[in-house]
Length: 429
Image (cartoon, rainbow, N blue to C red; front, side, top):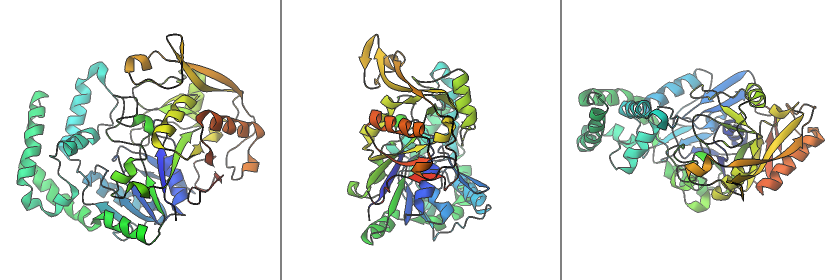
């Protein structure tokens, strides 16, 4: 059966958690393939609200869930999140949750460095979550990271730990911080290892076997394509590749295994932290979108910036990630707006532009070109059939399809799990 890769096609916060949870009922395995506990996936199931950062969203349904090698892994956060979600009645065991032995570890020294850099950056701050994600990926690329498999071989980590601390202690000196207490760090690792090791597997073999047995695999991305370290609004991006191509490298499966690419797209646009945002509405419309959409970060609690739907950016994200279909979320937030705006293009220094430029100086100068769109007064909240949508809402969806050159496969009409309209099934397309 075909597999499905889910990615965010804006700046994150598109509602991936709900869509992955909804799709996981049809999946046999759900695997996270990049990012870390800087992700924030909120699942609403009846009266229960599950806020996940590191755990794959499929775990709430009990679907086999895997944290792939492309994820940077904070073992202390893992322990606490497992305890918190288990305390909400979710069964989490090594039988339904596996962690790749190849994941780089996020250590306390990484969050120390993350915060020190951000504090020292002044006007150059990029809005990091200060959770050590970027420094952990840097150590992976620098071949000095400790990995999850090292937790089972702590007596042998001396040379690798020396490489790691030689790098970090030099940086800490520059920031006026004391050196890392090597012995204390080893004590901390010995303490946390028993909470992690029962879940550790060579997960690529689990996925290999799932593929051989024609199991449906759902690849779950974090953040959004516009935060991709290569294709996003650099330097205001995350530290990993977010595009669908990363699903293969970040899980240990071949590129021919990632299947149908589903891009999650919010019916308007939001962004957390610093960086360009052409359609941002720092006015009553933006405030209304934020209040109705409850736009606060799951991880940071920071207020999200809000604006109109940007078809140019979404079309670009769809192209670079090979998106086959969209899941349009939060349509109900637009109920009651007399008039909506859709960005259909830009001008740069008075000249038309059909894409978002790479350079920050040009990004700051683009001016959105809007198309006005009549809103609808009827409610879409809770709709579960295409026929339940107001005619004008359907026209809005169709216009988004035209402008982004991509069909809509799903429509989400509330945070609730089952308030979802299936237009075309990604697992069967």
